[in-house]
Image (cartoon, rainbow, N blue to C red; front, side, top):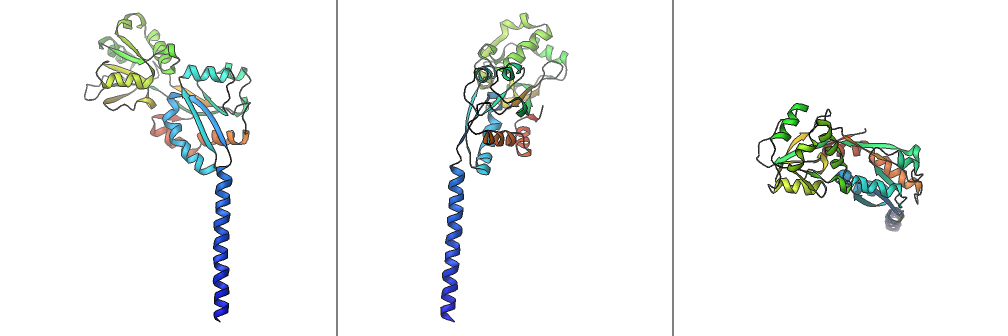
Amino acid sequence: MRKAMRTAAIAARAAIALTILVLAQGARAQSAKGEVTLIAPGGARAAIEQLIPGFEKKTGYQVKATFGSGGGTHKQVVNGEAFDVPVVQPPYQDVIDSGNVVKSSEKALASVAVGVAVKQGAAKPDISSREAVKKMFAAAKTITYPNAAGGAAAGVTVDEMFKKLGMADELQPKIKRAQGGAGAMKMVAQGDAEIGMTFLSEMEEPGIDVVGPLPRSVATPTSLVGFVSAHAKDPAAAKALLDYLTSPEAAAVYKAQHMQPGR
């Protein structure tokens, strides 16, 4: 009887050891899957950085992400720099024409609007209509937003809006262009600018109050579209990342970052 019990105990320990070995080998196999590289505009940074750990845990791939201005990252993709998953903003026909992405892999991640922010505690202006927005700009002493000359997509949107409103020339003396969305929000928080604008997903600076998104009638939200690179080291890995960035899990993160999933 005792011999049978000892034999059973030894068998049980062996089974446990084998299970541990199999799990460890599986974990090592996952961690050895390799690296997936991604490039995206700064407006997507907060959301994508939140999503990366979940993807890595789920698949075993490691993600190396590069972020920059919308125009700058767009140019990198067109020039064929080596990234497995490029995320770009429209217009992107030149990206497709470059041959550096797989056209059929195109997937819409999310869209994000340019919003308005003021210093914490300051009165929030009315931005509910085209006329209300014009009154806000006319009354403001100083306005800041990302510098379009540096490739900032939010800055391009704002410059186009000013032209659309017929206010581009009259507002020039009030404008303080910033280095990126974070720079614009910092100026607002410090009281160096009365009205600040950038993508809602970039409005994270302490010391500001977010007024809300600009109406579509004056500023169209910007879309973020992903592709599998034509030069991907591991196309299956690149597709897996792109699929994850357009998954229900991703949609929840985009919403939390004041973005709209899809186009």
